[in-house]
Length: 111
Length: 117
Image (cartoon, rainbow over all chains, first blue to last red; front, top):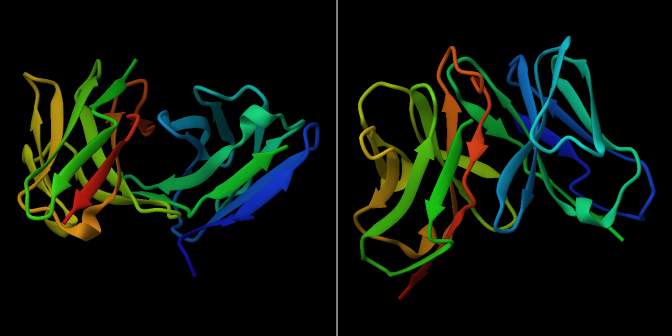
């Protein structure tokens, strides 16, 4: 099994729908992150969590929310999806050695 | 606030030629620096990282990078390109302990490397 598992891998949804992207990790790390990748913009941080009770906004959190259900699980929600949220989404986890491990990504298309 | 600039969104080299991908950063505290590679339809894989030890860092697949504080640079090099090196490469920065961005990665825009025969 992968260290960081994201589900679903691909999703097409309609404008206005609520959607949840899920992430789980087996690294035993406290820190988890959600990033969004757009062509020519690199990866941008949406939300991050340094432990189960700690949730922080990243640089592009508007339109998104997160839930840290357990040390191993960190989900990202789009309450009302819009087309410009079409992107590739990555979950990541890191330990104190700055070893960031990324999931394989979720490709989200909002039509 | 920290930032990363990758010079050149596309770089093309011949197989066997030197690969040089440029990265400049800004950070208010000593930085930690990273290079990641992304192959088509895959996630990000760490190539190498600088966390205040030796300034010349060797990574996987023959890549290396040198931290130059005076130039605020962390350029990625490989002496001889291989066809399998074709991918997108990302430079990233994080603050060291004590910085406001400690533990968070800020990425550059990415550089697509093409290797032609």
